[in-house]
Length: 87
Image (cartoon, rainbow, N blue to C red; front, side, top):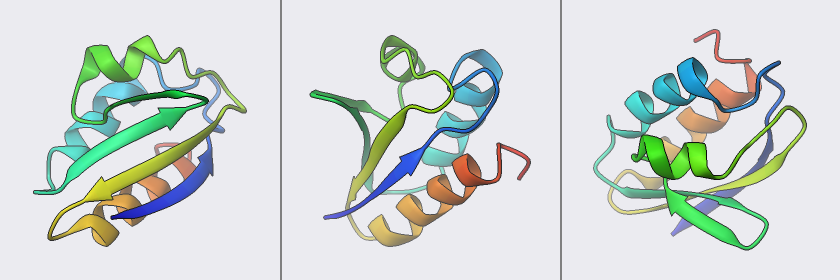
C-alpha cells in the first residue's frame, strides 16, 4: 500500500471536468485506488464517489493505492492535482 497527501489547487476543486480527467487517469492503473477526505474514503475510479466528497479548492486529500503499480498510480494522480490538471 502506498499513499501521499495532496492539496487540491484547481479553481473549481475536483468537480465535473477535473474529476473526469482524474478518474480517467486512475483507470489507467491496475491497482485499487482511493481518495480520502477527512474520515471518508471513496474509490478513485468512481465518478460518483469522487464527486460525493465535495472537494473544493484548498482541500487536503490523501491518495491511496494498493496493487502492482501503486506507487506509479499515486504519483501520477498527485502530479495531475499539483499541476492544476494541465497534464
